[in-house]
Length: 250
Length: 319
Image: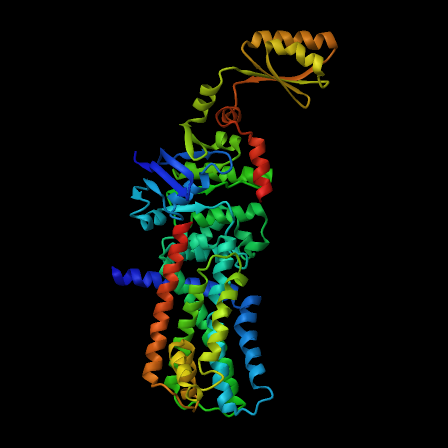
């Protein structure tokens, strides 16, 4: 009985994800904050610098999975609240966890899909090589899931539009870029910077992606994987908690 | 017969504001139950509690025999909800919207296409199945939303202002649909600010004002209990002036509505005699005359002190 209920809930989560993919992937805020933003930041970082491509491609991969995955939730949930389509989920016999899982899956797929672009570019044009497929796959997949859940968590903030959620989200996302070994490798940071870096989930994304594309990792890969997995669970559960609190207030 | 819906002291507070104040009533299986009240009376809040969109502050209720607090998932499995907003996805087609809603309600996969097809036929939406929801007229959107509420064959449907904002033809068509639901013994819990709509459709009506239930009864009983005087309405060939109205006032309370004179009378005989005398002295023709007992609208005004016309204007203004 429990297995069939789980299967039913997963089917509903998938239906929600598929619906979100159809409706929100090509929306302007998704394209702007999910694709244009990371690519623009990357270009502003590399143009004029004498940076080896081998170092640049992992940065772009990490940035795109970070921004793309965490953008879909903050676009879809506030819009659905404003149009009252979110009430459809709340009045249907599905758990809030299922709904949030579905939206996380939508963000996950977006994050993985968009981050494949720089990987393919690197492999086809810039002679990048995948030296550790497991590290690269785990890095991208765990990060996409975790950052999608992070987006869902921020989407629990009260607000009528995506902009009102994107502002506090970017207030967190942008500083994270600077303490996560994205622009300056962790090994080159001062000791306090390395400590701060260890606490950031994005650090472990860039570490695994660098390892996967022929670079080095400052932390043990197992540590990177574990921390990303923990963050994914924490973000999903925190997101659910905040959404339940919102519902109780209504 | 088991009650489809039973409320006992149901209450909702928002801080110091009591939106719904210890209301209690029952709705029988298979009846159309009208829930009337001015704007802000607590109608939508009551529905939101009964379908699990918000938790009550106090009291209890059962829907389809299940407690709305302890067994809300079971409640949600058994009810359909037609909210005031047509809240389906503009970017999806009618077909895709109904399919998606079916999945939310765990309609078995092999039954999905058949059910959706039947609904499209029943609601005459088949030709629009591939049209994006956002491109439909208001009336068609409401039909799709009602179809979506029935996708899992619920025996109880909650409708919040289903005909609000619709043109006359669309509203009539929707009222016919609601009557058809009643023919299938589906319990319909309906909020509306169109008093005459409740009069036409509802088996029983509850009037709520400032969160409190004022009366629960059949429309006919409510009309009878609030005013006994019959009403005489006469259309005249000329709009009467003030002197003519003063002449009619001894017969009862006189109201002028365009070319119609309306008199709430104690004695129909006296009223007819006064009217005949007045028109023959002034050479005016009576083009139409009828008598009736007070309407539900008049009873509503007597109970709440709120004009239905004002309610409609406020509603349209909020849209």
